[in-house]
Image (tube, rainbow, N blue to C red):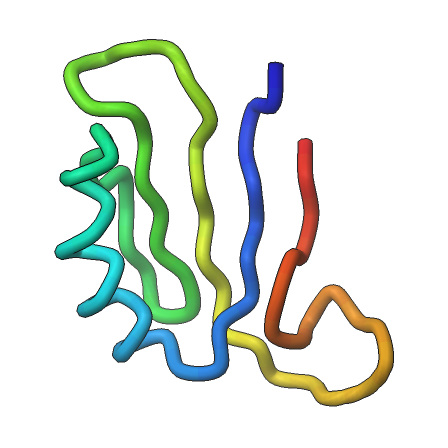
Length: 73
């Protein structure tokens, strides 16, 4: 089982506005939000993968700080 996914996004505010609408439709609820990240967990305590979003702050061919998959744990 995957515990959590980390995703880099180019604009954290825009991404949060979008995912706040989409994630409940997929059975997720907000977990926490901080200045440079926000996350969701399965609703109503159901088991499942947490999803974390981080602001991408680096360009390049590969970096955990750029847009896209940051990590899987």
